[in-house]
Image (cartoon, rainbow, N blue to C red; front, side):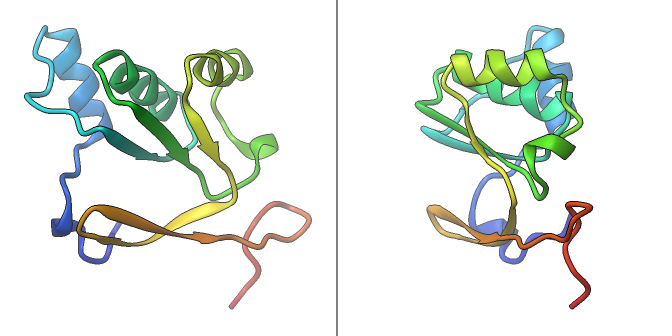
Length: 116
């Protein structure tokens, strides 16, 4: 995904972070607030991992509603129980120093954004 001004903050690739953890190599630094873009099991795993690594806030940003989120229900419930925040119907608009600007999505009956 292309994120405008992505160089304004530190962005890690989810699978690289998880593979590193599997190999015993935790990231050198996890921010106080971590945003994860996506709605699959990998996004859930990363959110739970960064919370366990000490992030005060882990927030999943997903472009569709919960009903269309591909992550397993039990994984979502467990993540929420661990304090992971969910922001359904959102997309990353741009990244600025110290913050991510998200856009609320509007969707049709199939939970897809209408043609613009």
